[in-house]
Every structure is written in structure tokens, then in C-alpha cells.
Image (cartoon, rainbow, N blue to C red; front, top):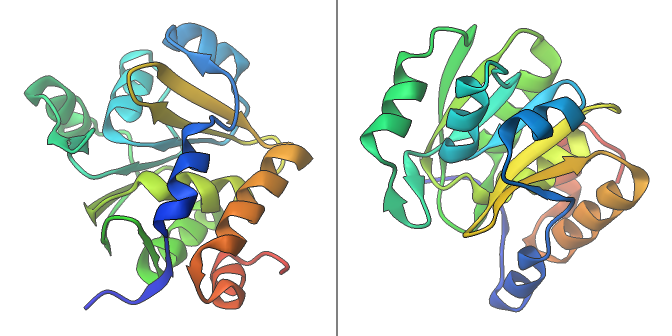
Length: 184
């Protein structure tokens, strides 16, 4: 059974529809504007970044997009990419953040090199802890269904919004901050 740290309640879902930054449909423009390290949340985003020649430093994928399996070409791009130094399997059920995912994210950010976190379950909520835990200058990129890719530049406002949403989720936020290695 997964060690769930936080769980998203229904009343917060609407807040997640407002992007944490500008939406891009042009991957090259996004790459030009993105800081480093580059953290990709989602298969489609990871695929586009790899295809654009800008492999993410950390990528989280779950072989799904919008509740359906990703297309074979997206899966093939990720599966055949040999640029990740570390590939790790983690479990994270839908609408949750597990200790396993949070610890793996923190380790990936600390280790250097590039890491692919292959999530059994769902990686969607990982953008929030990534925004909170990634170093200054980093960029978190995630998909906005039907619109494009969101570039969340890590400034004080974006971090505060991420922390606010996380702090209102059900669960143990003190443990969340500890696992991410950030102050409460």
C-alpha cells in the first residue's frame, strides 16, 4: 500500500486549472524561456522536450495523458531515449502525493545528472512539490489539457501559490516539507 502524505480534495481541483505560468504551444520558444534545471511533469511534455533536443533534468511520466494511454510515438520517444542517467520506478495513486514520489523527486533534484521517474499511478500533482522544492533559476513544465505546456518559472509568487495549495490538501504537510527538504 502506498504511503500517502497528501491527498487532493475535490474543492481544490478548480484551483489547479489556473496555470502557474504562461502557456506555450511552441516547444522551442518554451525552451528558450525556461531556466535550468528543467523539470518536466508528464509524458507529452517530456516527449516534446526530448524531440526539441532539450532533455529535462528531471522527468516524471506515467504512460498516460488526460486519463488515456499515451500514443505509441510518445511512449517510444521516452522509452528509447538514452539520455537519463537514472531511471526510477515510484508509486503514486491518482490525486495524491506519496512519500515515495516526494523522496524520489528530492533525490533527483539533489543528485545532479538527469533522472526519469516512471510513476505507477499518476504524476499530475508533482508539479506543486517540484515548484516548491526546485532550486532558484529552475523551471517546471507541465501540460495544460487542451491548451499546451505551462512554464512555471520559480519566483516568489509561484512558490507561494504552490505552497498554499499544498498546505490546504488533506494530510501531513509537516512531513511533506520534511521530505522535500524545505522549511515549513
